[in-house]
Image 1 (cartoon, rainbow, N blue to C red):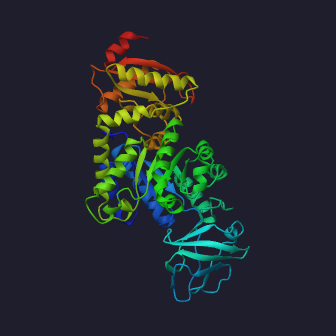
Image 2: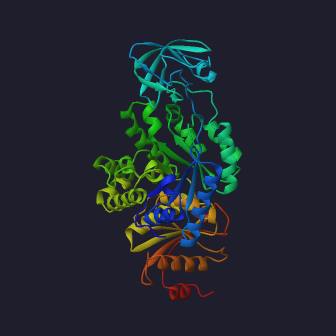
Image 3: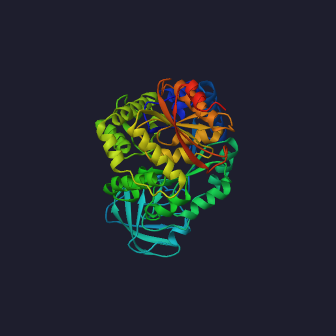
Length: 481
């Protein structure tokens, strides 16, 4: 299904989008990737959603990526005798390992690993940062705090510890079970929550054994500090601004977002900007102007994808939310300023033949009447490198591997077409010309660029760039054998 934009749209599925008809409507409205949130829904529900996505894919003959988002370790306080308490600013409050129900002076924090690394002066954030506690004195079994920001604290509220790297594995026992389940089910991308270090990514990769690409969610200060190493270990990145904005001052998030997006672009790895992009559309059919500007900013920065969370999973207007994102993307990408911004921010270290070929393809396409760049790709690397260049013409990814086509649904500007395995370059050119015409990118009078590697069907062999006519008789006339 041809899109008239380059940025991709990720839509989270949930109670509001739990039927074949709704999933199909979301894809037709513009959703390229569907996110399955493993924090919500049983394995049976996830299996049903997965099956419906694949049915839509078959019915529309359109590759769709499925992203399974693991919950990650959740740190929570225990329970209170009265269910909740009101904490006053300046009051003393203790966190400890005692399972006795809490009161206005203390509550259980059943995570000894937190106490093992806490130091005086550290902050603990409760309930998405609505309550802030400053540690004054601590041991391996307790932390005496002063309430810096008060409010209502209740049973099982989440705790964030931004100042320290916690000795926690990124994968809980639930995550491990969920990971194996979705890998057997057949998802394309696996998102890791609360990544702190590259070792967290290595652990997940060992468990996936190549069955899914790994996407690291950046939502902790430790991940920002170790970002270069995490990026190198990952196949993609999600800038998860929700928790990042809890653990860091909110004014720090926009520059971090911009910096991370540029680093992902330079590395030719897809990056999603996520969280609260069209939050008001959970209850309203029309977004706020600020939300539209937020979505536009991510597109101007060159993000590969923008994501809907509760807007499509639990909101009242899921299709309208996707349509809004689609409309904003089309409008932004038609702005001459967008081209100026994208090209001014283009930077890439080029060391390989493939790097040089895709750079040359962009240069040729932008200085001549080329209608599309058709790149043959087995693993997806050639298409990703082409997308890194952010060319002004469409990118058609030609692949015989269904999993590659699905994964590339997350990559900027790549529209994938399935093709059979080839043995001759001439037929590669013919198939590319047919795809360009069939998808409406070019007519028989136009020219395209074809990127491929010989020998065929071998990853990492990109070594040919050809300017080709879309008229088949001209292709055969130039190469009659």
